[in-house]
Image (tube, rainbow, N blue to C red; front, side, top):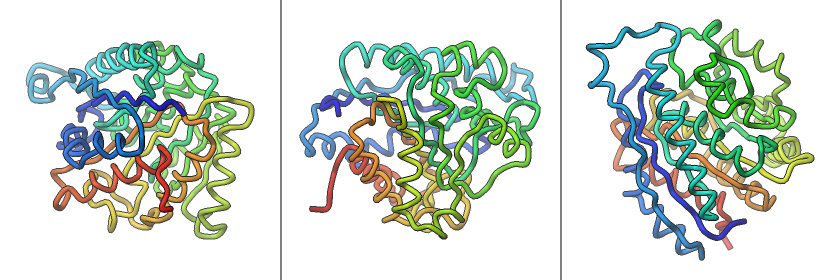
Length: 302
């Protein structure tokens, strides 16, 4: 594990329906992420926030595609994020990406391709599948499409950024899912993504479910990316997110999973997304996000 961490904030909310997730990077920083990572023995450089488009600057003079809302602006942010991630890699930093909505993963994995050429496993920790395309989306929100895009599905404006696929689809896992759209269920099955639902976790326990996910994601590859949507955690623990779904990971289940990820020594990039402080209480969700990041970076109870 690289002992130098480069933090990149991506304050984008154009991919989501609800406002406020653009303040996620600031909330996570306010919760002490930098000092707490340093306390684990890492060097940390904060690259700041990349410039993202403001919905208020575009909504009046822009015709919104109902199937791909704000596509050109989201694609532009992805290009900027790709370049910033590549610079982070060139500086020999471990990229820690703070969102923003989940559409930012398109840019993250496009940038990470410079390191591993797309030969990386991915565990998409999320209540939702994020595997829609314009043909299956019920909302047109692009934060419901990035897992499909990094797997090679979707419109060329997004797939060409990497270009996609920017992951190894044979090593792709959706973890903690409990709210999947009908069309994305078909997409996930056709692409061969390993799906571990909350029902699987309930039945098998978090240890076995985590072992299965990690084994699948790391089989035959040297790199692992974790894309962690905070709504994977039950809203009783993480109220500050725009698309909460009951019945998610408990506090300890989420930490235990990431502790097991840290033990692989294969983690090469990490994202924490969809923290919305406008829906939170006393920055509780951002504080949880910081704790989960620390577990992924190797923090142990003892």
